[in-house]
Image 1 (tube, helix red, strand yellow):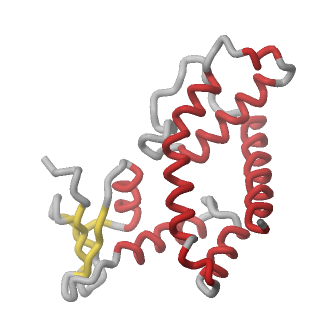
Image 2 (cartoon, rainbow, N blue to C red; image 1 turned 90 degrees about the vertical axis):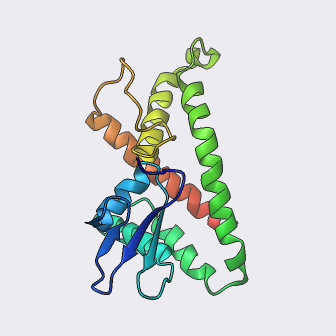
Length: 187
């Protein structure tokens, strides 16, 4: 049984093939992305030099998903990241991003619980149920498949498959989120 508390060690050979040291087989970038989605930490090292290549490969995984249309990072955010490399802000960007994602992880379960809690005094507000469903769909889309973020758990009984209205709502939410990120970047 593998020790999942320690990072999964992946070795890169001179041929650029990636070798999983726990299972003694070769893996792909998609396999590594799957380990990460399952909650596993990974470390990728060059076999010959011992250099840590983890950051390089994680960026490659993100770039491949973004290029396939699985966009998570709006262009404005990517632009701000590029700008941060040439400004004095460079030192706070990693801390800001890490803190933001940590806060998101901590509060996501609470948000889902609060959205579905009944009786809720806000339930009497016209349109509240539609807003709640829109927020739930947004959170599931943003966090789906990420362990500990609520998107990969068992579905509730009253949930139906996503309809075209839900998909349109999600697109609208993504647009609103991009606009908010744009405003935040101006601050």
